[in-house]
Image (cartoon, rainbow, N blue to C red; front, side):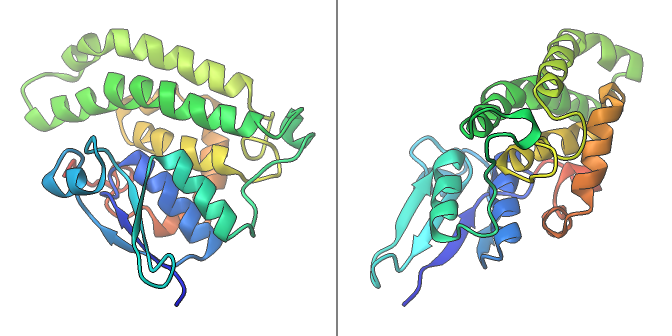
Length: 226
């Protein structure tokens, strides 16, 4: 019996969306259990209550394996479904070695999530939904976060190819890890900080069927935090 898959994670989770983007792009069927981080179900599947977890059913015809942490999951997906590839080769988008893609992925997760989500998106959405502060007051409150966000955006753009995907013509995991963050950013007023290069990249990403298939339940289409 071939393995089947369940993703534990709400569509609102940017890391969860990175993984479902990969699954969709590679044509891997999966079920999704839409739970929030640090919920009982999240802790049942991840020792620290984070998202996502990929539950691999029938690994050896009997056992289930819970695979945690998005980069580990991405590597598993690549192993069981190497095509269509989400890797780069030296020369793609100016890259010298293929490991630079994983460097970019790590930048997006380790530095992008705090800069985009924690520093700007989450406080902006919370402020808007509470309805107690004016736009000017919210902007003042998140000003330190916006400054860090601007630096993050500039640094990421600096290592991207001049046009196309992150690595030019080659779609890769780098795109799928950055896109959910910037899709959230584009949904709030601070999306005005996105450069023409990043906006053009997002428009190109928006044409992908995998992006369309994973948009439901995200901030980018008006969903609210679960």
